[in-house]
Amino acid sequence: MNAAAAVALIGGLILGAAIVTPAVRRSGLGPWHPAIAWLTLHVVFFCIGSLVLALDGRPGPAIWLAGTMVAFGIGVAASDRLATHRTPAAVSSEPAPPSALRWPAVAVLAGLGVALLLPTLATFGLPFLVDDITGARSQIAGIIVQPLRVAVPALALGLILAANGDGRGRWLGVLAVGGLIGAELLLASRYLAAELVATCVVGMGLAGRSVGARRLVGLALAAVVAFGAIQIGRAYDQAAGREVAFAVERTVSRVIMVQPRTMEAIQLAFPAEEPFLGGLGWLRRLGPAIGRPDIPNLGYWIYPRLFPDQVTAGYAAPGLIGEAWANLGPAGLALFVLLGIISERLGALIARTRRSPANVIAGALAVVFVARTHALGLNGLIILVVLVVLWRIAAGGGLRASGRELAAVARWRT
Image (cartoon, rainbow, N blue to C red):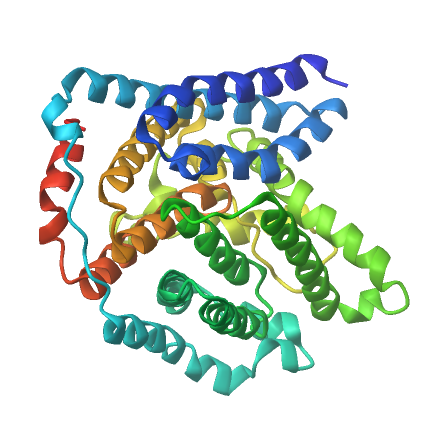
């Protein structure tokens, strides 16, 4: 048992949450602020498992996580203080005008996201309906799936926001979104469906729609059931005869423990076995051009250390937190200060521009992807943010209506 690491983790979480609170209150976004979303997902996917490891005498992930949460909070607080000092009262009282949502563009972009996957699906089949679910699912990765991650959740949230206030309109919206979730579940992908639901929940919150505790609990239970069902389907040869127990074990392993164990494996490898990558882990594809063709893909490289008995190669998402350590070591804390600054500015921008559906959708996607850095790396985050901006330009008719707000946020004037 390493009680000191456990105390540091809990203290880091409390301190991180405390120092972001003024920024969250000033924005008026409440629980939908990017900083709250980031902390929440790191508590779910990192804190509990890291605490378990610390109590088992393995303190590395807990100590590193505590440091990242405090560094993130410092970035949020520093950015908020600067904005508070520089914001003129006149600017803070003028919200951005609405931006109309262009439905033809929304539909076309969602269609393009699906179309990019069609050649893969034609070759390997629809993952949940073929014998080798894991093999087919592993092909739905990389750049071809990124537009889908943006365009389909955007379509789902747009349908919810556009639903009429009467019962019929709401039910039509729910049925349409349910169909999109079902389609993504056929891809045997946990994270695609989860991101879609999360985008809808965050978007409703940003739009001022009542989400409600009962709905959130219901969604959480539905997510757990769907997650377990996908686990059983993807490895039914191991689950046969003990489906419920297998689903519970796999869910705990994949949700609570896999990220801390991945972080621990990275810490054990760097720098004891391999020198810190010095930022080259984010420039892997440029390796041959700079004389470093051996730069590893961190997720694939670390996977055998986590699952040495598994024959099929897999990917263990290191997330930004793992990439920061592998590339920079303790100096990687500076990356989370920067992420905190970006999150605070993103929150300020969303607060200023969320009167229109196009801005709400783009803001919800951005919040979800920032929060998802528990498993999403730096390059993946950059790609998704660029796609969100492109989606906003196409579906919202450009950025002219929000240009003044963008400039004010970039200059810490709001």
